[in-house]
Length: 314
Image (tube, rainbow, N blue to C red; front, side, top):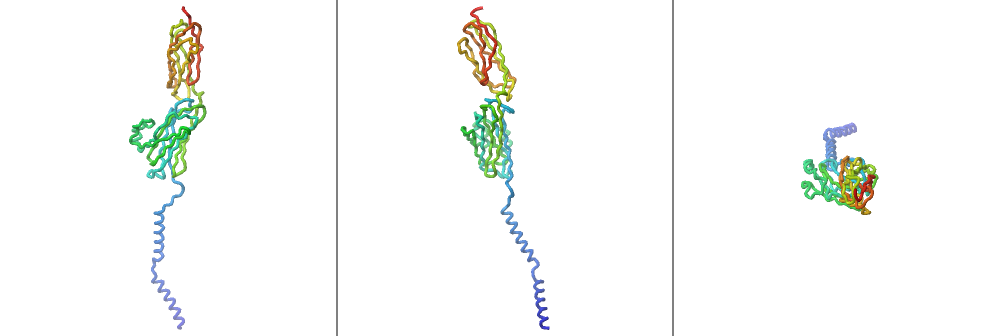
């Protein structure tokens, strides 16, 4: 009987402890662990993968064409926008921009500044002067000095801060020196992500240029020392671009048989199908039959078979 009572007493004690134990003991531990976990999430955010990057590099050649000729003067316009780190509110710092130009293209003129435009209103107000070297231009925008290494045909500008709503613009003029396909490459470099590049190709073929040239002679027969007019008509009838710069030279007299009153060694801008008239006075100094002076256009020589007869008297 005594041993039975002892066993019952142990069971009673265990039952009392179970009944009097707090019922929220386990949930209190869970709540404490959840708070620590939540605090860690809020103080140390975790990003998966690389940050998003948005960019738009617009490169335009003026005048626009699929094919250009050697010695054409072209303007390259560059605009950079929508470059940001994750969102518009988080700007990019220490942005490096490199402009790399093929050695087959001569940089004849270039922007001294890279201009940062921070609003559409500012862009609309100053868009007419974006691509000019005017010291008073874009007073509301921040300009960055554009440095060019002429030996390597590389330009570089360093931007301290570039926001999502900002635009960067710059320009430069180039002239092809030979036929072929040449490129200009814009590279954006920052510590936030790998390089961003945009390449533009320029095709050059001199055979794309065509001129129609005719000559009118005032009088086919003249006497010695009688001045007459030669009318050269030059039409830019086909080529790479709608407007072309041409250099015109008239053949001089190497044997002193005639005197040309005006030698048009000059540069003209011709639109397609535009007719340029050059009126050249000429005086023959001896009798005989002569061909009129030939003419050179951008280094290509054009001659004429019309003959002029010079007599000592009629």
